[in-house]
Amino acid sequence: MAEKDIIEKALEAIEIARNTGKIKKGTNEVTKAVEKGLAKLVAVAKDVSPPEIVMHLPLLCQEKGVPYVEVPTKEELGVAAGITVSTVSVAVVQEGDAKNLIKEINNALKKG
Image 1 (cartoon, rainbow, N blue to C red):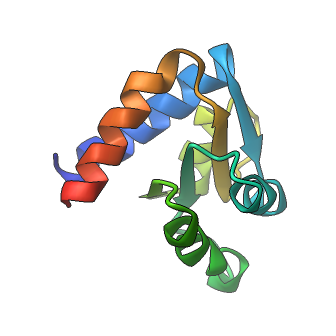
Image 2: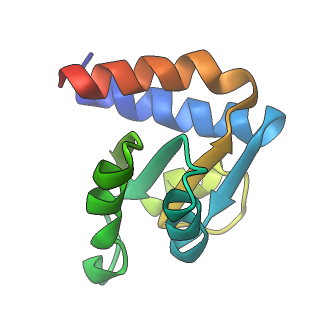
């Protein structure tokens, strides 16, 4: 699966989970969700400034075995999360109907 496909599926999974499950928005909330072992998928925007805000997340996700996806912009992430402002990171904590999609993303990331 191409990186672009993984990004699109991650954004779709966030939208589905927002409607049928539960998501956490913002770096502090996402960090807590990963540390507590609640996060099923983490998405972070590439256009974060300064990048230090989210630098800890890829390592933390790797440590906890959480699939991690970088999306191009924080605006896209905000839209997927269903908020009117941009957000730098989102974690899916309850998949809802996005369970299979998240499984698919996880498998693609493991192969990649």
